Image 1: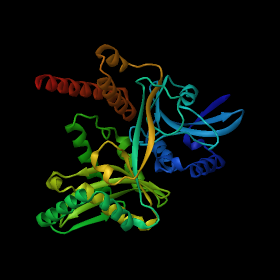
Image 2: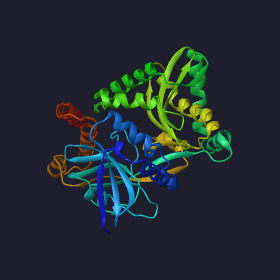
Image 3: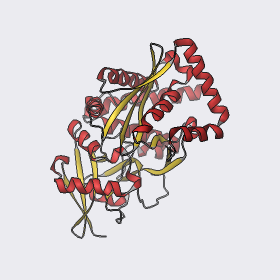
Image 4: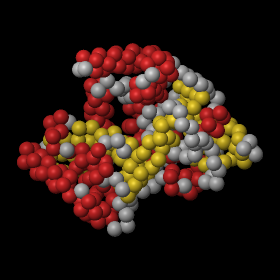
Length: 373
């Protein structure tokens, strides 16, 4: 194919190149996600470290951009581990595979968890095909969409209606606010997420300051691309919050947080439904729920996107788990945990501490599993 790459900082993109980025993104429906908006890469470049963009050329002609961040000898998509979609933003007629990108970057390996675009179809355990799911509202609006979902899943939505009545009986009338730049509330959400990560043995991606700063920067974005915080209250009691990223008609549910006070009343379900109802009138017709694993998502989503999780290039220490244990599930879990640690922690000390804590959590889980046999 004769592909080449020229690596530059995000700030060195020319106005013409920025225009091409936006033109190519608009030309490909698969790249509607706000994570492909140039504003996301700009924001990460302002708050993160090791951020660059690979300008991809074929026979001397610019055909695409791949924004990424470098951690040691590994490249991650820009904003990882908080970036829920990644791809080459490029000429719609050009086919660029994962292996092409990995070969052109000045690193030993490329790690992706939600790649959209062509890949080489490898069948080994370093390639995993996954699905994400979306609610496509359609031209008739929210009420028509909701009526269709309710007719298909009547029992589920009856149960949620009972949950709402119970919530309002316990706390007062439910109301959802689409917040402005409420940074104090965002700090509360981040604190709740950090507690959740630690409680469940996952790496706290909000330990490093750049991830916190990034969310606050995105909260201050303009209406064409930004993050927005929605909160659900019953009476005067706050029960749930969710930070979403949105642009170009797509609303991506991103970081939810729930308070234990009203957890049994499914406040998160009502928060997402009421958010959809309110913002549909603002031109949003697609709501992205991310990976399709949780059972509740099937009641809302009517579209799916196929993505690839993979590590391309040289092996790292996590491969020892696969080789020594012969446990593919344990190897995948270890690889994902390490990716979250390495991508979020720009300093070696943070990676070491994160690895120690992850190791303790893993040992504890294995011990509990053995004791339950």
